[in-house]
Length: 434
Image (cartoon, rainbow, N blue to C red; front, side):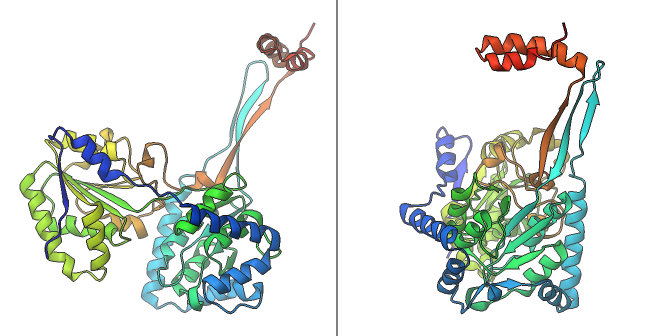
């Protein structure tokens, strides 16, 4: 049965309205979800470890008798790493090496300068003390998520990295634990859901409170992160994964079809879009989609995703393709064209840009080096990939000399009195030389 993938044509008068409908995504927690999450957070805040044990046994169908059953030590993480098949360990180590090397280049440096009168101004960069990393668990386990969240924190100099990962029915993913060992995670708790987020935000007798929580999760995790924001920092409230392929019509259509599948297989709400000026090529990609779909292990998920949220968009030329891309501001943008560098200066909004026909987005998910935690749902207009800078803070440095305090005190005095803040003014005036 052929897929009914939506077709859009940028030359149509109602194209903007069609595009808006295509992109509409409301990741809004309903009242029921909010109620459950608020109850969980309140109980964890008041009852601590006891609430964590009860919720974990109830939601993850485990039989923990206390927090000692819900923490994995460093020896267990190392055991997981040592027990991996050689090929898996080599791949994980290579990915970790590349992710670390890329993020090493992001480290901010403190700076300062001295003015002629001796006044010193500057900025001091310091890492956060402790961060929490949420990693999906059970059968849908992502060791790559451990690397992408923990390694930037480690490179930033974070003193303690706490990982929470649910283990439904006691299912532990050895690759996830091995990745934690490689990435420098300090403590691991087998907790999930809103209760894990609450524990990280407020702390319990066993789980230490953190400064920031990062990592993906389901609607309960996302809702809990939103609820605790302000008490702690968070990375983002992420929507479904998405890919936009801008193609000149010369890439093997099977390659592009599979690139679209690579996001569609995440879940039914993922979004895959092709933008191309060649109508015949769009037809060829659609034929490849229908040919390859029956060969996919996650065929049903891909089918629903493509039918509900995918689109094949015909544009007049590559300039218009770039315009459409900037309007969408995709999480993942593939420039599957002969000269991607020529288009690059025109790209204003994208989480990650995959350049050239050989650069599959999937490489970025695992081992290219840049972070795969990216802004979704158009938020690339104002947000950036997760990085070392997300785990560092900037403090302004200000040290006036006597001469500088006197001169700037006169300026501050005038401005403060203009705002009727006389204590401000007099504080500055005390330093003015006669």
